[in-house]
Image (cartoon, rainbow, N blue to C red; front, side, top):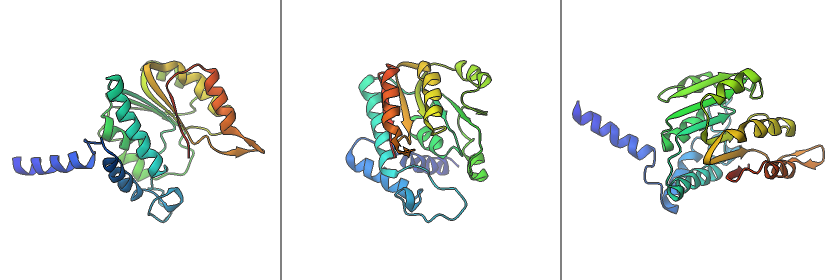
Length: 217
């Protein structure tokens, strides 16, 4: 039994890329993510209707993880407390937790989008997670989320209309820890003849939040 445990442990160590330091390491991670991703997002899978695929571009996600690892080292600060606005089925949440082993995760989603229930159930496991079902701007939900602040990492990927992004940034940027990081996903889109990502960037600048990483696909 001891031998089997050690064998299993080695496989886990390899899976989570604990030595993510070089460009070669990043490319290995990128290739791994491509196998979890549909062709529309830059991966190798064909959409099969199960919605078990990763909803992020492998190149950009690997860049993000590499950046966060470097940021931890530069600031000499572990990312411990993670808030995800737009949890979905939790696949991204699990991937990030594999790398950063968060002390506590808070997720919120209204769960109105199509997703895999099997994925959702699997991605609730093996993490210290508080998951809230509801709107990200609802007062009752904000009250719960505030109980666990400050957050070292906040990932905003909820509603994608300008008004929704504005509400999320107004509410959640105030919950960052010192040297915390706010990530805004999927802001590059055209609406009504206007480039809304420019409006969102201007909004972010108006908040005077220093450490914001714009994760754009």
